[in-house]
Picture 1 (cartoon, rainbow, N blue to C red):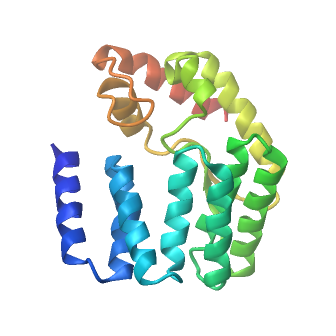
Picture 2: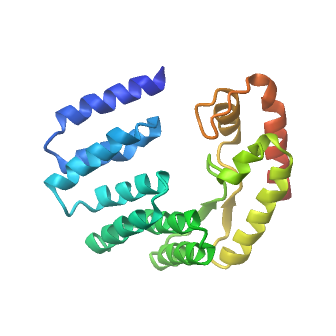
Picture 3: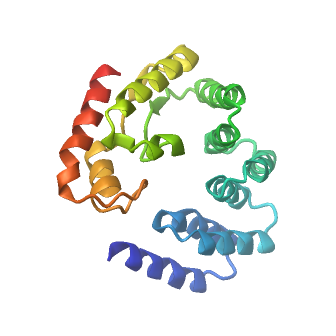
Length: 219
């Protein structure tokens, strides 16, 4: 399949890029998209062994720690990436990563502070932010109750939207409610290739899409 092909190409490119820390960091950043987290970590650690000041490698390792529920280690890596490359225009990824790490430990005030700092930085740089409220993933407790198969998720999502609007509305004019909803619904609930990995077949799709559309309309 396409994921197996992508994994094979990434592994081949890694062999060709054994001495290039930038290419290794790039490969380490894209490899998680095919859920090969172990290979991604090896590539990023190899990049840092060659160049300990590779800020992007530190940043991507921070995301791997977030995925592995190691938020404290993730924050250390994001902070190091910021110190190494304070003028990087992509540093909003580090602020988002630190916010995500704070969400893992349920310190939502600190998470919101990181997101506000990211938005303020964008404004200071003359960039008008566009915020996507849902991008292919849910909190675990949402998936535990059935995710978008459960109509209750509509209310939970709208609660989240209200809080985001209250916390960041003065800094954001453009919002995307749910990213690529048909792709998310089919890959997440029909084939199981995306989180939450539910393989319900095409019969589940109408209910999932109906709940997503209702949530979009209410938001």
